[in-house]
Image 1 (tube, one colour):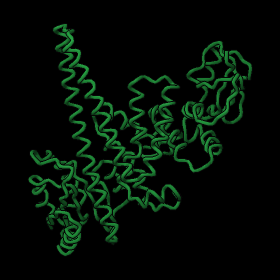
Image 2 (tube, rainbow, N blue to C red):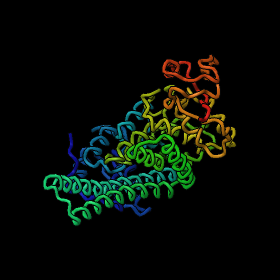
Image 3 (cartoon, rainbow, N blue to C red):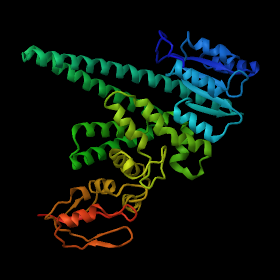
Length: 429
């Protein structure tokens, strides 16, 4: 295995591209096209020689043909990933199975792929997106490194304070300053990601404000602890950061006529949660938020993407985010959006997550005599304002029933094959 090339600069403003193609005419044409756009370009016809170059020279984007005699493009880009993991890798191919592409994207071996023949404009947009992807990764890692350094210093100081039992004003001030530094580092990383998405797709970024507002209200309603609130906030703001890997035209078509997407474009859309997880990084708390981002397009019935998770295998915060995101992205009227969320409960969405979100949505009327609760919040002594039915219409508990331990256990053990999808309301005391 190749170790990452040591000593190479990690510059977010680097615009150096490596082009690898055994057909020298094609390689020279690509090199000239990119050179005219202001890129510093190196062209090599041998992938073996290119591997050696990668050990000594940093690149922001690496482009490779797939069918080459010494090794395939995927094999070469796998070497490139090990040597320069921050560089955006683009595969050019005429024939490649969809399964192979999906595997390469999921593993992170490639950032984008282009099918021959391609339009010049399409090629340049793809390379520009790859360049921005590289800059985003570098800046995000720089911010995370600063946050990690502050965390390390804070832990060291805490250990010193614990050992020496120091409680002087100077030590408290130093500790408070470090805590502020960590908080500022997290905020800076988050705001940077939001600015990147805003520059790439203002429409997507605009909806993230609505998503974050509702997620904040849901977190308060559920009394989530501070750690979960922070993870949900990061995931709410950055849920679509992986869309920077998708051409803007594809995003617009996905938003307006998703059913008409071509298979390759649909594949790009379905990989954006994975790209998003990779972009937010591995530092606490971004790593936890990354898993929420990765899973927020999964479906409760297992028909979502990218991993086909189902039920409680989907993280709870991701199940909440999925409902909020659907509400924020809806082009329907508020009434129809609410109806869609409720009719999708138990199939696309976790019924408990739908209940948690629906009860705090703005503009809903609820009788002042009633209070909406989740299944997890049911307690003995509560009196049902409405009967509880399963999705197929089976009555489990009638209206007016005073709940006790046995009836609550029956409700909570109701099988997922016929879930309770309705809003649950109790009388206020």
